[in-house]
Image (cartoon, rainbow over all chains, first blue to last red; front, side, top):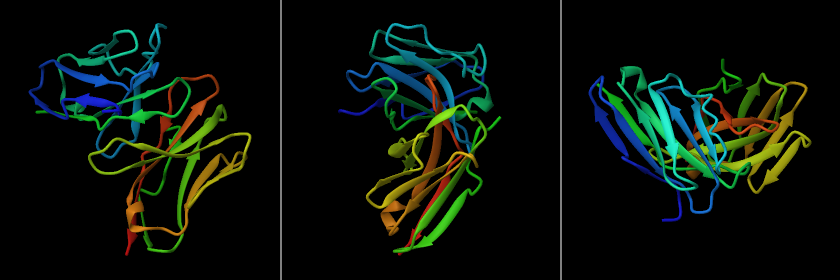
Length: 112
Length: 112
């Protein structure tokens, strides 16, 4: 499809396990963002990739969170040793850089 | 520290009437503001934006007003339609920054 694609759409895991969330941005979009939305909260910025520049990791809540992006394509957000407070919808967005953000449908993570 | 605030978690409006969604911000460095609309189980989609050099931007039934001195913006939808029922997020960006700061959202219900 032409939009931002995220997988899995739903993930249930046990506390302490690692999870990987994947994002396929819109082809040609140089910028990629990860946000999360916890229940009753707004969208919380996590990390931003722009081309080959060093990512802006200022929003990552702890060192258990990391993300990678291969060139201007797929990105993976990894959460190690998951905690219950990590339960949220993780949203990926892409843009042409400074322009409108196009969001995926999100990956809903539930940590039991 | 919530730099973008939407103090009304919900709003109900009769079909055909005007919907007014409000947003306040605290950071005077914000120079670009956006409204996103989100349906259940979907990612947010861009609706309308405004630069800080303007005080009004109109697109069909949607108008965004910006009051920089009050650090306040609002989204007007007129006439409201049942299909407008969704969660509306206000977002803001600082000059030269990468990420958007989002509010917590307002759930609009348009009653037929």
